[in-house]
Length: 304
Image (cartoon, rainbow, N blue to C red; front, side):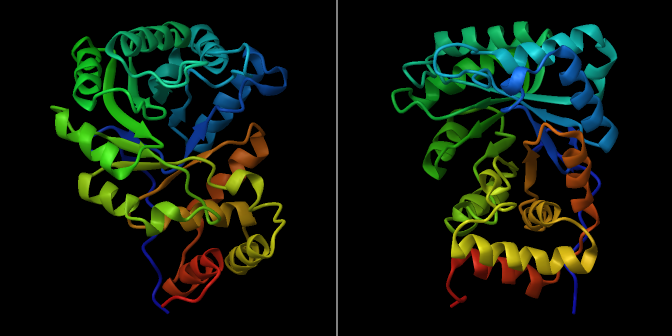
């Protein structure tokens, strides 16, 4: 049976021309469990040595509801300060616009403040990708666009992205920007297929957006299924994992990557062996029948 195209060794961040790895490493758990600069440095080296160049963080990562805002950025910044050569090896992405306890703020004044604060914590003068973390319903997209373009003109940001935004919200912001958006970051996994079926990925392809998938293992439920549906998805992934000698989680990443939108799963693990295992997703080849078998399990009903 005909196989789908193999996974590429690299992708391009939107229309920016910036080359990125086909998987990313995310830092939303980085500040948990007593991480320090030394343990963070080991993980950074692990990711780079595995071939990952896209590093995704956010100013809210590390916040526990009362303290820790900016903690993940500070940890990564300490690593970059101690080993300046690492910065040139990575494409650095961060997010902002969540302002506890408001909770969302994309007013021009706050965006300018948030971007500067992230750069200071990361100990860098520029990030390749800055993303609106969650949409602020009270912000006019034209004002948001101007504020972000001011940061681009100042050399603080190379490209722009959004996270957790609806299709109309993405279209509205794109309308007011003078340069194209580069990325969108929705939640996508074999257990969360909304973006596959509701047109989000179709819009991303139409606009040329890189799709960064957060929680690509369904919050750990792909590895540890609980419900009948989750067990069905796990079984469908195990079919391909068993025939190609990879783990179920590697198959779950690869299943996303096989979509024509060029989905880039964000690996959330803070364990070196799991980061290396995730990269085995690159070797997996899918047939249409295998890929659709996972989708049918995720839908819970046959295809029409």
